[in-house]
Length: 92
Length: 453
Image (cartoon, rainbow over all chains, first blue to last red; front, side, top):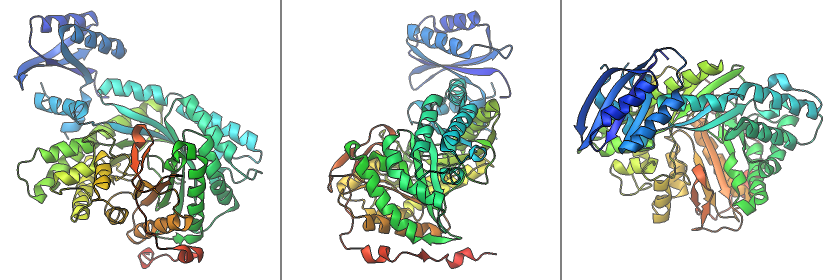
């Protein structure tokens, strides 16, 4: 692993409070937003965030669980993945 | 942001909609230090050794799965061929070794353990003979143990005595697991040119040139290739090859990343990345579907071998560009029972055993997960094996036979194995006898291709 940065992807129907809800949970887990982008793709609200975690010992599974829980509450799908998966797959 | 949103969504789509996964993380464990004349001590040694190496295998792979968001379906172990390490034991059969492997697999929480194996391409030692004779009972009394026998290589030729013997062993294995549709045979592979580092079951074992403990990874993705090919607008065959190559590249890169990280965390060496398009019973996750996407009405019709050759070669080229550690079987698998498209092709009458045999000349393995009628004779099974071994030997490639003569079944019946093993339609075999040919025994000498020095 070359870094502790995560890509958080949020996909679903647009509604009020998605960004607020997601970023609140991130703050609770001391996860910083390094970059954020949102767009509508195939009629779906799509938000992609690059998140940074300071220190090696983040409880990833607890964070992932909290993120899927807030996703469920907001009616969107939230996926948290280490950024390396995209780097390796698409870049040489 | 350095990573493009389209790339992120493409990856997520591959996993959620197209069944992209790491099919297996397989830990290869050397058991050569475990030998002992007393079988009880030997069994204790291998149990302790396996659990010491694989203690954290499942936990680590699950952590990696969560970290990257890529499903890892199976966690497996392969061990040094038991015929080699058990040779010094003063016993007549090795069933207790299989039971020990089963217990260790259970305790480690893994799905399958491979290596109840012998390499007999040129002849048999007393240990090899004991192991082969133990197979039916061993596979009937264990759940997770897989067995493989290498009976041919390009360098050594085909050991036809072993081929003849395996016909009887397969029949006996089917009979002893007759109450479960002969499932023992689904855990038994007969090989030509068996690779030492194959992570896929049932044929995985930890070869004799391998390091002490190694992580081999098998990546799959017929569904991804199928979708990619289908999304092309009126392509020519060159475009299809290019598209498959690019897709295989991406899949391989992901597998290598996962394999290296698992190996690093377990303090094991990273071995190989096996990029094999291994189908699952899920709709669309099918090698037959890819061949049909290229323009064949039904898999097995004329043109199928050419389409499969294109697919297999493009997969290899993409994989070779993406990783320097490509090994194992790497190519396309055509197991009938595990591929929804193959099953349909058999039912439609477009895919026969003879066509499957031709297809194995140009893809990575062989006649895989094929059900034949319960009354198929041992000599016919041996003859089917002999044909497949000849293809492997002459073409300097791995071929294998995993065939299930399910007791009491006839052509057209469907046999349910469940899970990834799927559902097998019982296929017809030729009714003309091969008895005399198989009965002759001896060796088919190494071919001229062996003289390369």
